[in-house]
Length: 110
Length: 114
Image 1 (cartoon, rainbow over the protein chains, first blue to last red):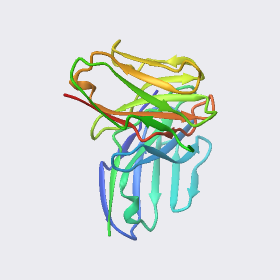
Image 2: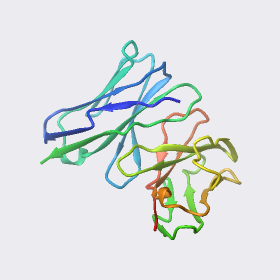
Image 3: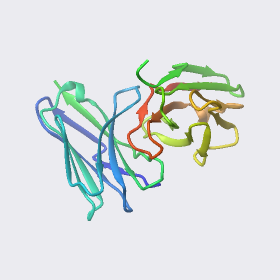
C-alpha cells in the first residue's frame, strides 16, 4: 500500500472563492480517490479517478491526475461554508488497501 | 438504514478494560474495513474482511486487537486490556465490491481510555 500526501496542510478562503488541494504519491496506481471528512464524522467518498483518466468532474468538484508527476489535484469551485472539512486523497495500487495521509484542512469563511 | 452504522458512538473505558465496537455495513456489501483515526491524523487501516473471511489484518497494532465478521455482515472489533494509546476514533467502512473501490464510512466510535 502507499500513502498519499496532501498539500497544503491547511487552507483558508472566503466563500465564493475556489479551493485547490494537491496530492502526491510514490508508485504506480490503479486509481486515486478523494474523501471529505466533516469535523467529528466519518469520511464521505467524493470522486474516483482511474489511472487512464486525466480529469474528472462532479458538480463543483474537478479532479486532475498526472501519472507522470505522480500527483493529483482537487479543485472546489465557488466554495461554500459547508465545504469546510478535511480532505484526504487515497491512491490505490491494485489489491491493496486505502492509505490516507494527514489531509488538507479547508476552512471556508462566510 | 441506508448507511453504515456503528455503535456505540462514544465509549469511555478504564485502562485495562475490554471493549467491543460494532459495525453494521450496508446490506449486501461484500467488503468491510476497520480504521483507526487519531486526533489530527488521517485514518489508518486496521483490517479487511471479504464476506466472513479476514483477508488482511496486518494493520492491527497488537494482539490485543481482534476483529470478526462471523456471518459476513455485522462485524465486531474487540480491544482487550485497553491502553491510553488506544484512544482514537474507530471507523468502519464497507464496499460493494471485492475490489477496493469507493468505500462507505460509518460515523465512527470515539474511544477514550482513562
